[in-house]
Amino acid sequence: MTTESPGVHQFGSIVGRFVDNKTSKLKQSTLPVEKIVLPKYQPRKHFDPKKLEDLQSSIQQHGILEPLIVRPLDKEKYELVAGERRLRAATNLGLEEIPVTIHNLTDQQALQVALIENLQREDLNPIEETRGILKLLGIELNFPEQEVKTLLYQMKNQTTDTNQNVLTSVENVEKVFSSIGKMTWHSFMNTRLVLLNLPDELVEAIERGEVAYTKAQAIAQIKDEAERKELLEQAIAQDLSLSQIREKVSEWKKSNKPQGEGRGETYPQRAKALYEKIKQRKLWKNKEKKEEFEALLIKLEILLEED
Image (cartoon, rainbow, N blue to C red; front, side, top):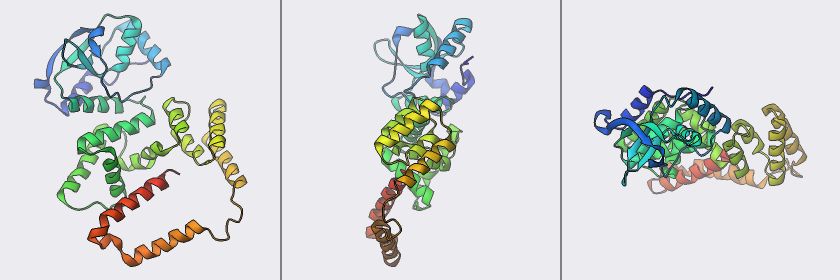
């Protein structure tokens, strides 16, 4: 049976990370369901129908044990901050009122609480999880998403500057992952961020829970769109294991090996030549060209992560 978690005390600690509970908390009460509106940004886009049914059964037997977190808006409306599954379940059951805890939160505070609350749960899919973490990092650093990615790649390659602003940003990144408690920024880089570069059909399959992200990454190695989609459909229908998928990908690569491979490739030769020039010129030591060189290097790294 699906339970409601994390508990009430943990929700309080989530809010307390961003605001003073004593001053922000207005009251614990009940509100008509019709007065609660959804936020503009919702970390969770997909809901497992079976888990929602289990939650509804639990609420029918025991009621809503854990109040939803809301914040007051104009015209006697309240915006949901945490607890969308419970709100959906209550609506499906036809409940007229539900228990809530009302907090005075700014837009940024409400988004931070919602993101942390959702990221700490186990049923966010990997795509939602990745986007949520990027959003949370952007809020904490006050960076747009691309700058967040740039900083993460710099951290990975140990090429961050040593000025205080950059060091503070690195500390804030580590603080965000510590607050989430599910992974480090290293593992996020290696297993999650790369997922956003997958072909659309693979991203959507992960979001729907039809295929594990590790299987999707293996399927993505097939560059022919029609054959990739065919393998995806087969993997879902037959519930292929990761090893079975890798075997089929290997077979595809062998059958699609370019004619004449091994007699000298243009692109590898050019890449090798560029590498030698970069070593000779040492562009990273040129103050005027360092920033542009770093940006191009990061773009190349992102492109390579797609595979």
